[in-house]
Amino acid sequence: MRFFQNQIFLLSIFLVISASIEDGDNNLPYCYSSKSKNQDVPVTWKCDRSSKKCVRTITEKDDDPLSCKTSVTVCKLLCDEYGSLWPKPTGILNIEKELTSINVGDIAFVMTISDSNSELWNLLKELQNYFLEILRNSFKNKNIARGGNELKIIFDIKDEETTSFVQDANENYTLTVNIINNELVEVLIDGENFLGVRHAIETLTQLITYDLISNLVLIPKRVFISDAPFYKHRGILLDTSRSFYTVNSIKRLLDSMAYNKLNTFHWHLTDSHSFPFVSKNYPKMAVYGAYSSSQVYTWSDMIEIRNYAKIRGIRIIPELDTPAHVGEGWQFFDNEISPVILCYKSEPWRTYCIEPPCGILNPVNDEVYEILKKLYSEFNELFESDVFHMGGDEVTFACWNESESVTKWMKESSLTEQKYVKDFLTTDRYIIQIWTKGNNKQIADLLNDGYDVILSNYDALYLDCGYGAWIGEENNWCSPYIGWQKIYMNSPEKIIDDLRSKYPITAENPLSQVLGSEAALWSEQADENSLDTRLWPRAAALGERLWTNPKTDWKVAESRFLTQRERMVSRNIACDVAEMLWCYQNEGHCY
Image (cartoon, one colour):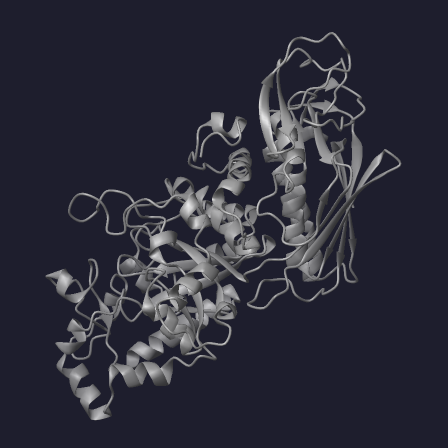
């Protein structure tokens, strides 16, 4: 299968060059011929071998037709041990310091799988389109010279049945690049399953760069990478109840996650503020609870988002927040004799809930469980996920304590809060998500009790922190603002070591109980207009923390982080500015 995409690129200059690298002591320049219109550009970047940083240099005009100059993108690809890859691979990495050009209009794909009518075949076809779309975005408005080698990408997949991420799925891959007869660049992608192949495609896109000096699209002549993630759960939580996000903005989020090899979209779909889900069983919940008839998610919307995520190796974990955090939409079931929700919009709200409007499910009304059963079954069918999020946080007991029917039922059942939790939350069925600070004793207690956990400690992973208060004045409750450096250094290993120094941890291997982490964007003060800048590039730091589990600090990663930010911008993600462009062009001078 061959895709010819010449029409998507501006081809205004014909240039045939010989790509070579001078292996000097202090620099690794990319050499271009005198036919390049940019030969008089005085700025070049040289690789300082000792620091592995690219140094911006001003050169004198040189009449030598083979004068060598290196653009910043080429230098960054070749200088550092990890090139400009993000997140950096965990296995073998060998990137040859010699480049060749590729013809972006001559790309072929070969799929070595048994069934051309399978779901895997269709996913691989979509993955090819995904790859080409990234090239289109990355090189839009570039004055790309004609010529270059054909690029052939071969997919080799062992497990043809696993097509979506589940908790224990293998995401390993190897990627090999070779130049054949100086006319064909052959890329072999070997994945255990579709997930590994998808990650390899992302890595491949980062090995391809545009050279501003020669106007060519370049790739190293030879590459070998073996790679696998350290943590299995690498997620982003987005709250679409407090503020509504369109389907297109959620797709943009999924794209951004894929660029950073994040694999779990935790969709906080409902809360007390709105109920945007159009349920087939209870469609009037959205009528009563959505902000407007246009600010809803239909079944077709959700299937579209699910399929979009799947191509990007991302599973969706839906959350129907209960028993607290219910309000709008639930009043549809209003029943004065035995209400479904209690304390709806009760005042003073600080007595009955964490933030307005209040509302909590009535545990002694059997109708509650029938409603939940039907909603859960819809979510299960829609998202095909192996994990479902039950909410369960921030239950304020004042409302239940003031309900005569609830207190009577608990006395008659001889039920206490502690007994209920112990009997219900069994370690083989439940994963606990951590919302506390990273030094909270409860984390140690949960590990000792045998629970697997996901870290979303708010002191490092709440990305809505650091803005003005939305209730009252001054700053919001979880200030200050959390920089990418703190996210990068939020190591689960270090969290456990620090806890162990304060509290007894009896679990045999507590780190194995940490499945990973999620960064959270709660939407009291964010919506789709601020989505990109609130999350990116900061959440990219989470991508490397969880994929690589780096032993070095953020300073070592800074240059690649800034490159990843520039890369995401080229792919139409409106990332916030982490540092000024001067820092990107002058490595090692802004920390």
